[in-house]
Length: 436
Image (cartoon, rainbow, N blue to C red):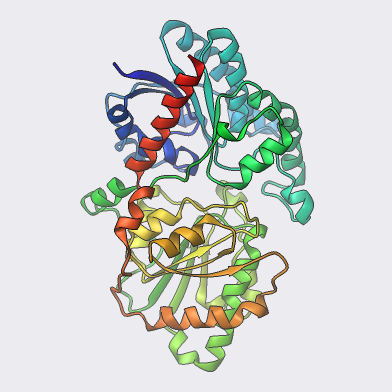
C-alpha cells in the first residue's frame, strides 16, 4: 500500500516557474517509491507569469490536482499588493482544510518559493496531526541585500515588506516542521543558528534533479526558439536565467575578458554573439535590463543581446540545444546554487561557468567533466581573474561547431530526476517512521 502526500506548490504547470520544477520532475517517479501525490496549487489564470502548455503535458494524467483561486491582481495592485502568497493564502487555507478533512494524507510537503504558504504547516499539523516538510529553494528571511547594500528585486519597499513578513512567519513555519530540504548547504547552517530547536538530522541537502525526460521528448515537440537564428553563421553563446546586482561581478569578469581578447584579435570576435535570456522576473514592461548596461560600460555592447523576459520552458531548452556554447553566471552570494546547471549539461554543449568558489555548481561541473569554471571569492576584483577568464574564452573560441563535451554520465547519474525523487521519498519514509 502506498502512502499519500499532499504537495503544496502555488506555482504549477502550465505556469513556467523555476520553483515547481522539483515537483514536476518528481511526480512520474513518486509512486515507484511508494508515494501517491495530490497537488494543491493556484489556478494559472490567477498567477502572473509566462504559461507553457507543453509543461502541463509532462504531468501524469492520474495525478489529482486541486486548484484554488486568489485575490485578483488587477485590484490588489492598486494598493501595491501583487504578491501571490498574500493573494492566495486565504484560499489555500480554506481549500487545504477541506482536503485534509475529506481525504487521508500521511504527509504534507511544501515545495515552493511562495514562502507565505509554508505558514500553513503548523496549523495543519496541529489540526490534523499530519507531519510536514519544507523545501527551501531560496532563503526566505535574508540579510543579503542589507549587507551588500544592493537594490533588491522589486525595490527596497517591496523587499522590506516581504522581509517584515518573513520575520514573523518563518519562525512559525519552522516551529513544528519534521524535516527541511534545502538546495544549499548554507541554509541549514543559517536556520539552525536562528532556531536552536532545529537539529542537524532534520535537514537534507538536495539539489533539483536533471530533467532527462524533457530532453528525450524535445525533438518530437518541434519547438522553435525565437532568440537567434542558429544557421546565420555566427557563434551563439547563451545564458538562460535571472540577472541582478548580485551577478554583476561575474558578468563584469566575463565582459572584461572579452574586451581584453577582442582588442588582440577583433576579427575573431566578429562572428560571436552573446544572448542573456530571462534575466528579469518582472512581467511586461517592468522588466529591467541588468546585463546590457555592463556590456555598454565595458565596450562590448555590440556583442551582447539581453532578453529580460522569461520564455517558455521548452523554448528555453531548445535555445540551449541550438547554441554553440552555454554560459553559466553565478551570484556573489556563496549560498547560491543554480538548478539551471542540469539542463545545460543535458544540452551537451561546451559550458563556461563563472561562480563563487563555494557554490555546488563548480563541484558538480568538475565532477561530471561537463564544462569549465572560473571561480571567485569575496573581495576578488575582476582584473585579478582576467588571465583565467581569457584562457577559457580562448578554449570556447577554439571549439568546433557541434562540439560535445566528454561528460562522465555515470558521475551524472546521482543528479537525475529519478535519483532525486528516490531520495525525496526516502526522506518522506524517514519522517513517517519518526512521527510514529
